[in-house]
Amino acid sequence: MNQDNLAVGLRTARELIGRDKDPILSEDNPFEAMMARFDRAAELLDLDPGMCKVLREPERQIIVAIPVQRDNGELDVFTGYRVLHNSARGPCKGGIRFDLNVTLDEVKALAAWMTWKCAVVNIPFGGAKGAVVCDPSVLSINELERVTRRYTAALIDTLGPDSDIPAPDINTNERVMAWIMDTYSMHMRHSVTSVVTGKPIEMGGSRGRREATGRGCMIVTQEALRHLGLPLRGTKVAIQGFGNVGSVAGELLEQEGLTVVAISDKTGGFYNANGIYVADALSWIREHRYLAGYPNADPISNAELLELDVDVLLPAAVENMITRKNADRIKAKIICEGANGPTTPGADKILDEKGIFVIPDILANAGGVTVSYFEWVQDRAGYFWSEATVIERLNEIIQHSFQDVLSVAKRHDVNMRTAAYMLAMERVAAVHRLRGIYA
Ligand code: GLU
Image (cartoon, rainbow, N blue to C red; front, side):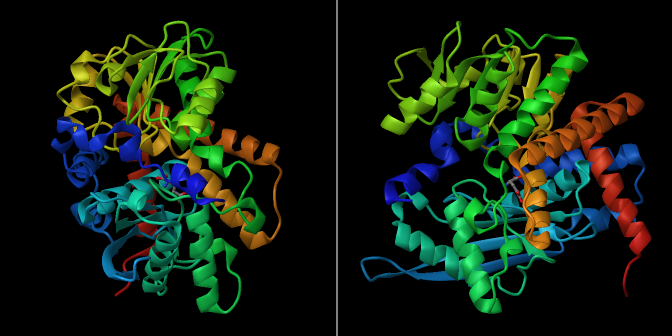
């Protein structure tokens, strides 16, 4: 992979939607957003207050200094985080992001979301998340490699196929996962493929992993349309964020007969009532890096995209995009949360009142970690599956999970988000009760 390709691969989600320009983004702290949903679900589950304390507290929070020599010879020190939220159901699992504005609170929220996500789809993992505070767009490929390797070395005691397994997240990709695997393996003195997922296929990655999050979004959208009695053909979709999640989901939804009418990245959005051909937009990006100037649709802003008269809205960029300030103007019938935490608790209430069917992040984007689980299983077995097998098993888990969440929602007369939290928290609490508290 040459440097240009890596740079494109590492285009930040911030770049995809221009987060730092948007004033609505300071509205909610992601950790508080997670806790607000947690508290509501705990109340409905009538969860023991002691158990609530256990579930809300991350098991470990690690802050490391990452000294790195820049290409010009100067020394820089970056800050790295890794939060292990809960390991009751299995090794902690979750991505690593490189982001200049990332905070420990955000990583804590994202780690807890991973615990709930793995429990919603019932895979035997707990939750974790990691981050390095840096702007990868100003680092050379060699500097990025040194940052990644030093971060991995600093976490060598927590990482491991049975304890803590990273994966890609915002601004990290297969190449970064390869460096993590190699660094860990050098320390262990033998190759350990299962320490990280989202690796290149040549070195133990899984077929279908790259597309898995977008594919999961497509599957839950289909399930939601079926549940609401809406057709697939001609259903209009708007996608915010055209990275690995948004563009893959768009392509797959298009294959199912839906029409993608709007897409966006950090340079803005594009709208065409007759449909935007996703492959055409992707080939424009390959040539021009950004959507800016895309000739086959009309330019709109990211804010306008969210408020379009469409059937399905797919926020696939970063946190806090749908807030109490814009929720009232959203017209979609279904919101499929491709990103983690795109909707604030204030917005939840308004969307509920409007009768919008929200497929929550911890269900909607769980396809990625589900195929990470398949990757880990394949690495440990040393036996690799065909893409058809991966897709078939992913379909089964995501469809099943959607129906599980829907039945909790019906039984308790709550929305899909609250139902997903209730299902997940009860599953994690049940394991804690069985295991007991070691003293
Ligand atoms: N970063 C992805 C997520 O937020 C994937 C995590 C994983 O595969 O471990 O779900």
